[in-house]
Amino acid sequence: MDSDQAIVLDTAGVEELCQSCGVCCSTFRVSFYWAETTAAEDGFVPVEMTEQMNLYRACMKGTSSHTPRCAALSGNLGERVSCTIYENRPSPCREYNVFLEDGSLNPRCNQARAKHGFEPLNVRYLNESKKESN
Ligand code: SF4
Ligand code: SF4
Image (cartoon, rainbow, N blue to C red; front, side):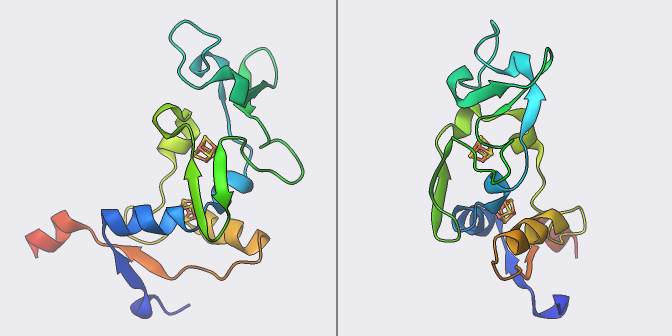
C-alpha cells in the first residue's frame, strides 16, 4: 500500500471513518475487569450487555463467539454503525488507538477489515500539533 497516497484525516474524519466501519467491534473479544460493569458499585458498563468469563473478567456480550459481534453495536458493518453505550463503553474500547504515534493506522484495523472481506484503509492521522510546529 502506498502511504504517500494515504487520505489524511483530522479528528472529525476519524469519527466519520469509524462510524462507517465498525469491524473492530465484530472481530475481537472485548474483555475487561468485571468491576467495570454495573454489577459493581462504581461500575459503568451495563452488566446486561456483558458476560462473566471467570471470577475476575467479563467481556462484552457476543464478542467471545466464533463470529463475534458486540451486543452494543448497532447498524451495518462497513455502512453505518454506532456504539449504543458509547459513554459507558469499557476500557479496551476507550484505550484502542485507531492511529499509532507516527500517524499511521493501527494495523489491527486492516487485519480486522480483512477478516470481514473489506478493502484495507489507506489513511493517516493529521497531527495538528506537529503541523503547527513545522
Ligand atoms: S477497525 Fe479501526 S477504523 Fe474500523 S471502526 Fe475499528 S477503530 Fe475504526
Ligand atoms: S462497547 Fe461499543 S465500542 Fe466497545 S466493542 Fe461494543 S460496540 Fe464497540
